[in-house]
Length: 155
Image 1 (cartoon, one colour):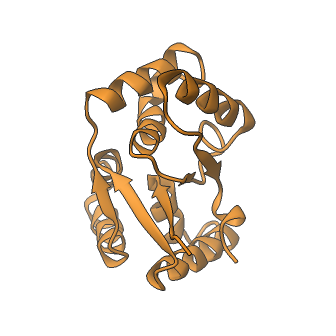
Image 2 (cartoon, rainbow, N blue to C red):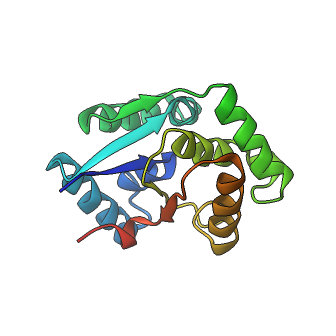
């Protein structure tokens, strides 16, 4: 069976190291164990790297080590990604001040991944975003991408 290609935004790695949300942390760790067992192909983008580097030095180091450990592939942000992200913002799917969230979705869409996995319920894992992204992607000729929380992915 073909492995699903999943995009992890920064929230996945943050929750894996968060002691203040033990239930979500445990779900995230289970998901990462499924990744380690080669169940999924996992991708991040340079947006994740930039967001990680905004953290304190100690936290950024821990996040980077975790990302390196699960051997994800890093995708680039190019002109097509920027254009699609701007369209999500222009259509009111993602607020302008959360451009990074639009970039996460756009990079996964442009690279033909199967799903975006996130704990970001404010702007990414929500019905309005899911429906809006499907519509914009169809207009631009990109396939429909699924958006899920880790709860919906783990076995």
